[in-house]
Amino acid sequence: MEIGRRYAEIIHKQYEEGNHMAYFALLWGIGNCKLELKEGSGHNIAEVIDGIHEYYDSRRKAGKAAVAEGYQEGLEKCVELSLTIEDTETTIAILSYELKYEKARPKTFKVNADALFEGLKQKVQERYQAFVSEKGQAFADTFLQDRNDFLSSHYGYRIL
Image (cartoon, rainbow, N blue to C red; front, side, top):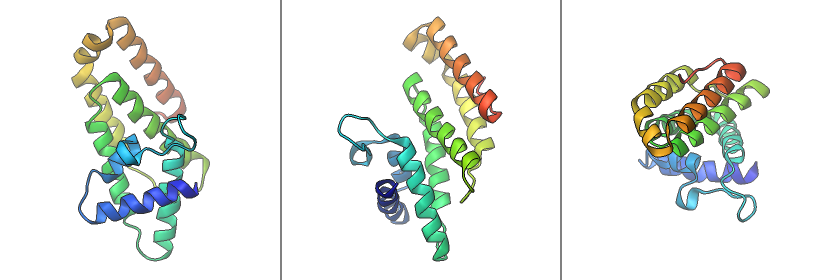
């Protein structure tokens, strides 16, 4: 989690300097914001989110808890830019881990999951035909239904 915390600290400084895409880049692992614990293992969303929460706790204790605002903005950007099935899968993985974190650990802060999932549901409806064109109707329908069932059974949210 220490690596994730250091990434969160760097990203938050960028956010404070006006880069409102910083948290989004960290969440999706874009460019030098990709956090791999070992080469080739892929972007580690869990390490990132754990690090953001840990960094928030340290800032809150120092009376500077604005991390949650930037993080929420980054999550909203993830939803907004879920234009392909792969993007949507990434966003669902991020939101799922955040909810898992909130459920399993004492909350350092809670994201506005209701608004995020409502936005994702709207994005899925808006992009459905593009998903079908991209992957075929059978794949798109199965993908969306599987994710919807998982989110509904584990966290009470639906994207369909």
